[in-house]
Image 1 (cartoon, helix red, strand yellow):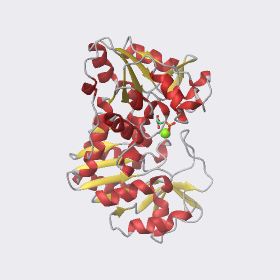
Image 2 (cartoon, helix red, strand yellow):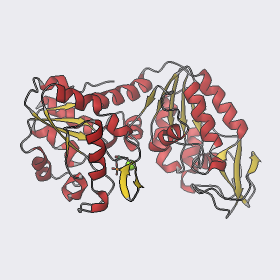
Image 3 (cartoon, helix red, strand yellow):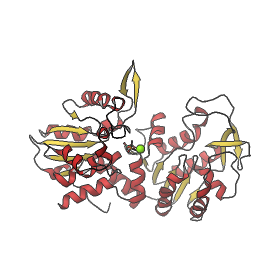
Image 4 (spheres, protein in one colour):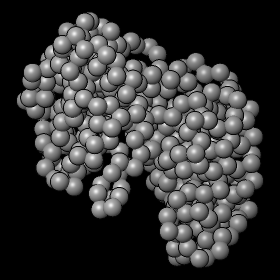
Length: 379
Ligand code: 3PG
Ligand code: MG
């Protein structure tokens, strides 16, 4: 990467020091016997090497995180209590402050709120890759006030993602999916510049299909971006699905599934129908490209994989990415969820803890939280 981040070793001897760690413990939760519990502790586990090492050095460690979007007000529904219990099981003796977003100063990047956070602390570590695209007080202000460093997982995330983009083993195949084309245009554009092939699937692909002159029936469509899609197709780097699987318009679909039977579309989709997943031949063709890749970057699912009838495209891609000999990086909340759903997280080379953050890092090559840490080094 084109810049260096100060590591924890730059903080010197931490024996007896009070260390404040910004983490991203914004984790999924569920009810177990009437009690809210963490249902996926991936983001908590990702911080354990740092937390254990700080403890071993004799530091007193306090973590702080946001959790959900309580809109600047205390709200028991968003208390970090379940997260605190899980943290105590995984790493006893580390404190966790209450939800940062209970105070409006957090999202407003209020200097006074930021200053109140660091009161009594000797130094600060940002180990919250997943929140480092947010210019919020807990990310931006501490590095201006006390000695600050990047945590090892943050550094690893940034190095892996930027390394894959800047010095990929070729061919570099990127896979972009998800529902909304407007959310993924910027990343798709960057990837057409860096990768050898950009595979596009998911709901966003239908706007590309229209740009190519195909009919898509009632599938997801964003008219205002047809021209953008046409320009991206003109790069010659984009590969879109040739077939699709879906339902008659108006039939229900989603995590609960549904009873209507799946229709397969070869090429055009008729007016009375909609596509909800890539077809089998597209999935096979994409999987072949993935198998040949030296570097693979995957962001976004190929269809409505929460519905078992439309999981096959995403599952085929997930299995291809997992099996591929090339170096594979998966980022973005939904593709990470897909990898976990198919129990492939140990088979891809790198699973990012960041959703929006990994997307923004690819798009911009930098993040506000990383800039804050570099700024701090110059102070
Ligand atoms: C995430 O899960 O995307 C991060 O924790 C950031 O949360 P936010 O999107 O609510 O800012
Ligand atoms: Mg988010």
